[in-house]
Image (tube, rainbow, N blue to C red; front, side, top):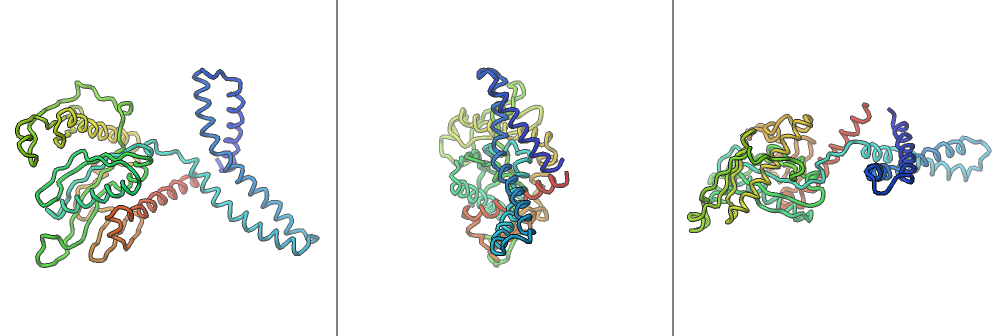
Length: 359
């Protein structure tokens, strides 16, 4: 169906729903359903009106420009206005096509971000910690809430793995393209000879699932409690506050010990488990997003990467869109990441528009 035909159909449906709402009982399920549809259609109307008006004016202006009897000065003004209206059309078409493309239902959800050290030993763990700080600072820049869920740290300040919950407006829509293998090239703090090393860390961004999104049966869970290990003083050695939850049907295991309360550790572990199960279901329903969790984050091998952070050259390159920014410190500080994120969002929109045009 052409764009014009689609827009005509939307306008006709908008008028029909508007009439049906007038004759519908305000307390009925039908009224709620129609109101929701009317609200969705209503967003299109001003843009469609502007698009149709621009096309009508182009026809009228072309007639004026082609008329030999029109005053030359008036014709010149018409030609200038014609250029303005012609330039409007591609912009309005792009806007309308983006509105027509089905939205990712998870875009407005909060997210759980998981980071794991890949290849590169201690340096990979240090890089993982740097990425975690980068996302925390980016969350602050965006005005989001950042909450640590789990962190397995070493004495050097590196992390083997960590997870955090990020909540706010449009979190998942911005962070979903961060999933994959991130590669760093720099001289490690442990390197005495000053040689540049290459290490990796994997990032997985999952839409945070509510209880209504994913139902978990208690009978499918095996919950073990134990003493927490690692730093924390005498408290961790005396209290069985650590929680390990195994989801028996899928084999997913979540371990949580960061909180002093067993109850709080269980709540955080369930939040992570729910997000992983929801992501698994989403992957099955939307195969185009990712074949499975392993394909999303890769194996951590140096050859697999979505982005390279080269400290000696001060650059960050996203290999999916061939974008290189020479502002590595700003990116690692969080605020500079916005330019990379927006470029990825725009490329995704362009690809979706291209798909729409093919149809």
